Amino acid sequence: MGSAVLGLIGAFVYGSADFLGGLASRRIGPLRTTAVGAVAGLVLLLVALPAIGGTWSSEALGWGVLSGVAGSVAIALLYACLAIGPMSILSPLTALVSALVPVTWGLVGGDRFQPIGYFALGLGLVAVVLVGFVPEKGAVRPRPRALIMAVAAGAMIGVFLILLDQTPDDSGVVPLIANRTTNAVVMWTVVSIVVIRARSRRRSQGIVPDAPRSGMRLERRGVAVAVGGGALDATANLLLLVALRIGDLTTVSVLTALYPAGTVLLAAVVLRERVAPVQWVGLVLAIVAAALLAVS
View 1: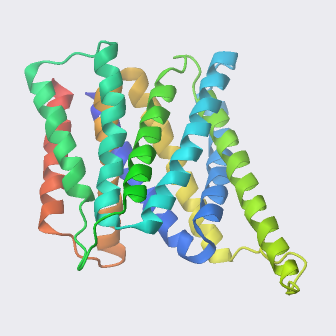
View 2 (view 1 turned 90 degrees about the vertical axis):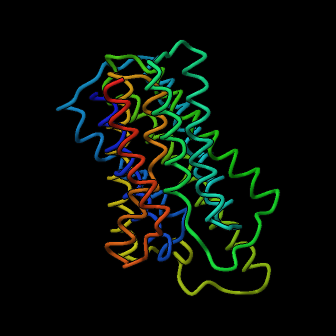
View 3 (view 1 turned 180 degrees about the vertical axis):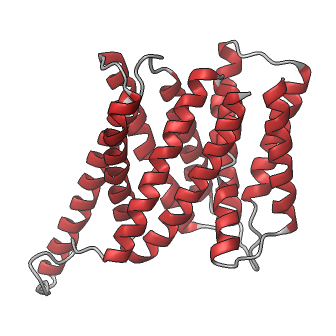
């Protein structure tokens, strides 16, 4: 029961982090938002380390680093495919694949349920698609390249879940610290490369930067929102890790894939965006699926 509840709560926290990340991306760009969020999440985990604890080991650090690499690739692919669009198709596709990969891994690895549990898993997967489905007027068919990237992004999110599930039970937040450190290093390296290439391109065109730090300046409000998103994302990771420790990968992965629900609800409350009837149906099915998984 505990893992199902934590998985569902974690999904909503992930969705909230994505909502703040989306707002921050409008101000400072998706790459910088992710980089700032990675550092913010790392700081939060380091502060939580004395209270939560964890055994430092090569196994904990190794799986943490690998999950950090997988997470970085997943984010890059996700942003790339959503930039091409349409989001109404690519977003739920990514969420669905992110659930199917670890579910398959878990079932092959020996996860078993009562009949009602399998029904709940199927219900959860349907909820993932319905919650992520955002109708767009005049939406176009996605390009093959965008579809491939969406599937790859979902697969890498699933790999991230699988790798995190391999961490030792006594490792506490150590794997997440390794994960966030790796993610921060990767993302800030990418940001630096992008800035250096942009400066080189300007120089080759005879354009002189207007300030010594041109290209690296960050708008304060955007940074603040990115920090909040990073903190929420780290919190969701912590909830996910605890859920995996006390439950099974199959259940947790399906519930975690419901993360678009948090984004949808916050967009409705804060931005007054309309929630489509099909999304409300998905939210109800998600709660029902979580309840069934909790008792199965």
